[in-house]
Image (tube, rainbow, N blue to C red; front, side, top):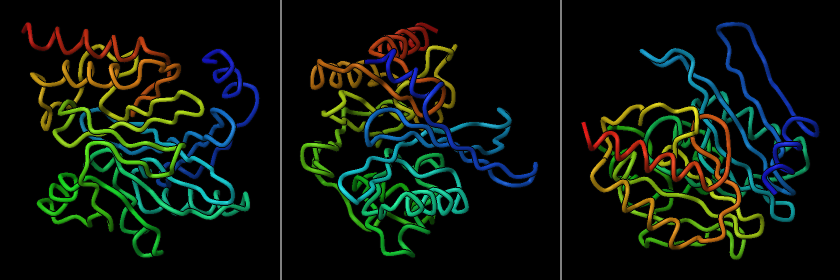
Length: 241
């Protein structure tokens, strides 16, 4: 299935909304039937232009956004794209409190689109004087869309509030920043991480979802279960230092 998804990305469907150097850039690619990846960009010091991934999952005429783009503007572009395809954004869930996952919450709330985050994520957003999601998830497992989109809190890792998203129909795990791409040489930003808990949290994911075929990280290229294994290796390296 992974080879099929990569072929789709490269050959089947790709949309880019490009502006000049001072404008936002948003890319949308089809990963599987009714599943799209959105990638937005932001200049972040000291790393420069950073690409961040999320998903759009279609159910009937409804669309569900998994992690918002970096900015209000890119989130609005994503909503416009969804509507141009004849769908309506029904809900959104963010995987942690950092801006690359939650930056679009205010525009979604303004449009009366239900936004979901864990209770802990909302607390962290409040501590930063940032707008919270309208709905708080209070359980470790939660079905955003029955049989289609499942939320799971595996334990702390990249951040203490990070969650992952499971799409059982296509056996796809959206790991967000909890999972590193194969190109990652280290864990990246760890200012809010719990490195000592990360390995066990990865194990909790693989125990709960033993049939993972595709993994989408928050940054970098998608892959398979090897992304979780690579992240575990990076965690071991960080702990050994």
